[in-house]
Length: 237
Figure 1 (cartoon, rainbow, N blue to C red):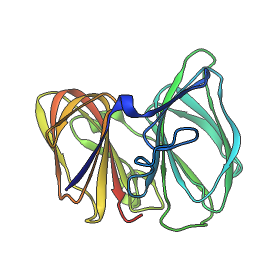
Figure 2: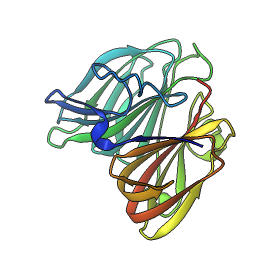
Figure 3: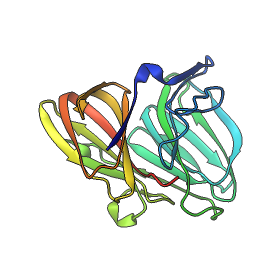
Figure 4: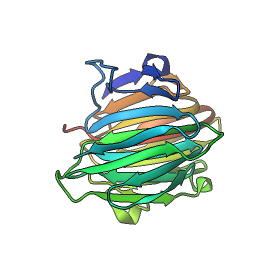
């Protein structure tokens, strides 16, 4: 099994006033040759956006873009005619495909917005762009993993153009849980949203992450009440 550790304090950081961003992988002005991607996972940004501020209309292509609001709500508009509000508990995905324009702003005039935005390389390039968002019951991830992104619609997550699965779990302290990659060629990138766990002898705290490949199952010792994000990612890139 191969292992990488990305500590919270070692992430790239850029504070633009209206945007306070932490980058797990090389992005914009943050460049680290040792942190370009994890398999097909290209970006995991932890963004805090000031009230009413955000990203104006800009293009993307050939990327699967997943947005997970952690606190607050996002106002989304795109060139396919989609518009709406994505709030904590929701998950949004765009298959940028052969090209799309979109904008994202903090929907609140008084409260900050915190979100994860995750980019994954697509399985099939130049598809027609598509958009989907879904509300998930947070109670359904209590002491278990809830699938929020999947290539199989029957799993209940939003659909992704890649052999990747995203799961969230809220776990009480003093238990051990496990997760097995869905496919043999997949690795796991585990982000500790909050709490404390031990994985393969490593103590992980808030916003620490571990990448594991060449494994059949991972065992997680939950030391404190914990929220985990597991990205089950093909390693063939």
